[in-house]
Image (cartoon, rainbow, N blue to C red):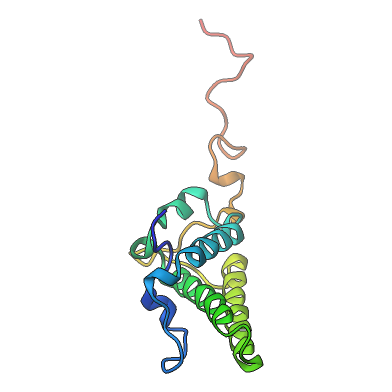
Length: 150
């Protein structure tokens, strides 16, 4: 699996205090996998598997998903880094994680719309109806089981 799945090191460091911590590429491998699993699991009922599979690296991943992944990874790494040192640092990491989860929940609920590169909203599989499939009740069948050919 690639080192960067949904977020780059810059996406992660954007959520860390500048003067206090900065993650490097060598520090994020397991956290990248954890964020990837979390985001895919949460959005698996919202987006088609093919859509999720299209997000193969940060360049092909929508910006808001990169943001969420960066926040999740930063929160987990920061919590690990300062686990024994300070309650204040644990609060920072926890708040960052909760913000990421809130964004993810809003995406799953359809309150935040994810668009493709052209600005078109990605298809939300949770809102598909029978009208999205063919044949359906609105279009009569061309032939049926009881029809005889002459």
